[in-house]
Length: 207
Image (tube, rainbow, N blue to C red; front, side):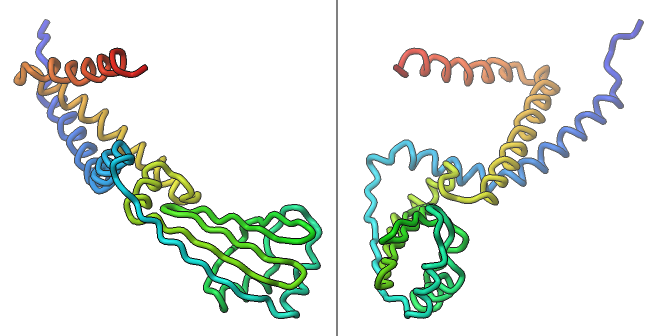
């Protein structure tokens, strides 16, 4: 019985694997580059100095807009639409549907974001508004993208899809290594070396 592999079957799988491999690598290219760079910046975050920029804005709600605050009785609820519209037009602050923490004296809205932070405070009695935004720079912004911190639902979905594409890229790469390993004797020693080094570092140096 002939045990030689069918060259047509091998050619089919090589073509298919190469196709999936290059497609997934093209999809992952920019993302892998970004995540590799931010992996370095996160690993050395203590050595990278950040200079946060703090912006503070103040204002006062008009009486007719301030009246909308009295319509809210819950402890947690979004700001009324007239208040949100005034904030957007007068202070260029877009709160959206974020829930605020309501007390008898104040409404406080936390507005964390990638690469920084922000908060808004409104005094219910006199309508005094104070808004503070902290910007920690591009490195902090990219690091937060890496971690998925304060990035919203759309970015979370992107991370999941990107991870799936990376898995496809890795698996197709593994099978391509397997198919070429006969002509490349160092294939599996190098693959094993990558795993052994990682395992040894984890066992010996992580406490």
